[in-house]
Image 1: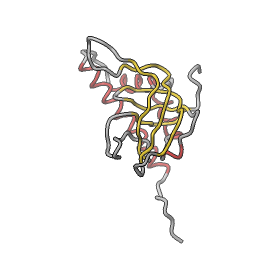
Image 2: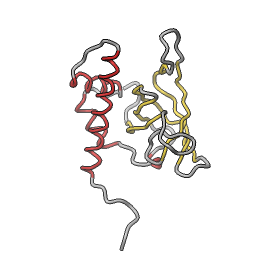
Image 3: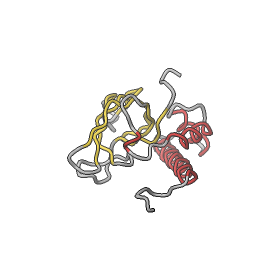
Length: 164
């Protein structure tokens, strides 16, 4: 009997979660360095974990290993998530997930816990808290045509409330 699903072990998923967090921490460290803020690799890992609402790096990795959405079907209205939006680490609440006419592309609407500045200018700011974005079946940001692009990435699902 054959199966249409991939045989991926839990260890593979755990490695991916850790590597994703490390890559995000590396980007954070680089962004801070561009603003003349020096931070160690360990410090960037801890800051990344805290920006996602975790107590420390070890807690973030442990939770990521348990809560990584592997497909858009894992998402649901009212579920809390952590991810990134235009380079900002974000957490929030999923408001809706709908299919689009393009196969494999979904429109997701979220309400962020904290507004993010989506303008790169030093002269003014543009804060957004309610976001509508397109994602693929793997919860990665895509353009309308399904090609990879900027936008919202849902990296893991959270269990805690924002007040916790």
